Image (cartoon, rainbow, N blue to C red):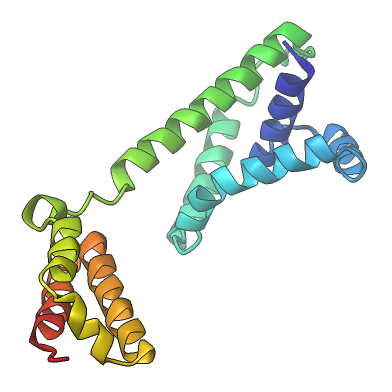
Length: 189
């Protein structure tokens, strides 16, 4: 693993919230002086930000917390004398790195699924209207002598309107594009 991979992984864990409080404080202090870590954290926040924004308005039902507490206390009463307490040991560094890598992979997969499901479909206008052909035809059907008779301001206005029609066509607004090209076609110079 290179140092860039280490920084990127650390930034991902920081943004995902998988660091313990001591490690989080260390990253907070380090990112104030390490520009590459600060940039990596900002990049991960940009990537994962839309996921956290999507769930902000969803509130759990009011009875849910009480139900969880009652189930926990009920299970604790049933297991009061039967459970053996096993001390937890700290996982080795290799398992920790594996868990962090799996978490990052899961987050990337979730982002990919969200991105593919919510990506806007490409407009189908390009199959129906050939924007560049309409723009080119407009200018080719005009007699160059007519442009000599109008003021430069009028010519600039015509050019802007033709570009607006082309942009509307490229953006998928077929109705606006046709209306602008029709207005341009009816103009008498």
